[in-house]
Length: 119
Image 1 (cartoon, rainbow, N blue to C red):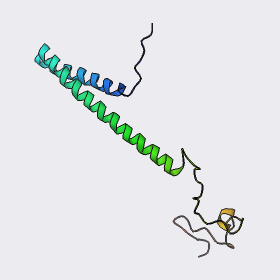
Image 2 (image 1 turned 180 degrees about the horizontal axis):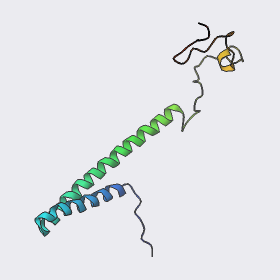
Image 3 (image 1 turned 90 degrees about the horizontal axis):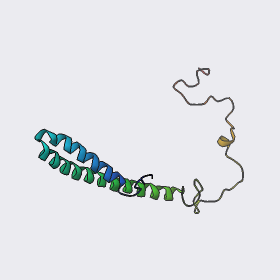
Image 4 (image 1 turned 90 degrees about the vertical axis):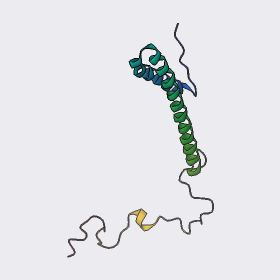
């Protein structure tokens, strides 16, 4: 029979708490069996608190990402669409730059060395 894995909100918190308990027991082993028990308790508490903090921070990040996705139109609306208050186009033609039209014989003004042939 397979053992079911726990899927839920506190899975990371429990894992980090258990890791803290093991680390605390290892450090407490220097003081013998009572030190191992005390180290496990303290390490488990610190690990559980750390896990809860990580879960809370992740929930905040997820909420922030969902809000940004909603605002820019990833999850709601049309991504990249013009806003409704945008003025309508005057002509149905593309701009010269987007159509690839350039000036007569002008070299592009990009890069560190511009128009070397013209000099």
